[in-house]
Image (cartoon, rainbow, N blue to C red; front, side, top):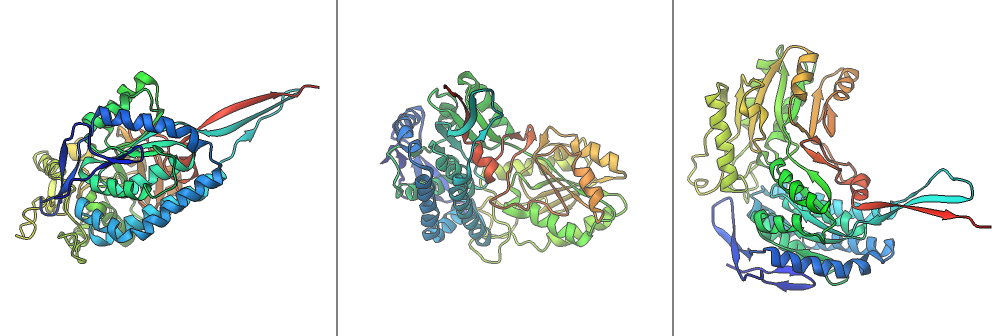
Length: 480
């Protein structure tokens, strides 16, 4: 297996320690290659390079920065087949999903390049003989810590806006998807950037992530991952008062009223839940279904779930691939066992696939629980797998109270033919994104981010781009 190198300061380098770690194919447990096991020394080197590059990169005119980031999108299109291959091999994405992620990732880069030229300041109400205005400036050195559940897309979503805004960037890709991160580094290496403008440091969060959070030379951390890890980063980063942009966990309510279009609700519910093998922060975590249609919704949902094909992600017929790691598979199985022990009724799944073609991979079958109550572990904690938790409700006020009864507030949806009712409800839901008669529908222009323990700040769209800038107030005295 090939030993890969990191990209730091315009050079391909081994880890300072000389150590490496294995990257595993989740479909069969086999080793795909080895990545450098970075640590504090490598982070220090990347920060020093970024600090040298920042004055040069930030001084470039915005049209030039936008042109260079647009070039990155073109390189991504040239490498689309390889990006799809890596997403399938390293993450376990079915090929159809991998093609979608490669295209969406490219569109995010294209949008950021174009939107960079729209950033503007504001002229403030004048005082006598004064001109006051605010202008947007790059933050400085930005560390981008990306998650394993959408490895390609999340690098694109963070790096492109941070870069086009004029920042120098250090990317820490997820360890289990390091080859995708290093392929992205190879594409970045082809850009006309000042040396050190972008570095990629591979390694675990306990060493590389900790060093990033503690480093006084890093001005902003953009992180996507678990709430637990987010808390740890906040504690460490607080010592140097870093800017933080965080997209954390979710346990998202999907509310189906008695007058909903049941066919549309079931179709969307299943597609969203099993998308990316359930490994999506936006996935419905709690299905609240009105008691009048509860049994029928559950029956149709199970029927729809049986249509999804668990299998080798290289097979075009597969719609659910493996979990991204053995650790994540074990986590999902822990929650399935917890649901059974706490008294939920298991309608479907709950066991690993038995096919001999799948026994070496990290697979979990579509699983459906009914008779779930608000106090159960599976109703309160993020499972991050293909597990449906279906709860019942009898009134609008009841379901609103239950939906808001969570430490999370990432997203939510309401399903009803009464649009006015739906809008009134979502206006009272504490979530960063809400949909009516839809769930998980986003594009490259829409901002994304949660409230409460689901994070802070927005990602994507012009709001996400602005998050990688500082506002500077300028006051000019108009002398005679």
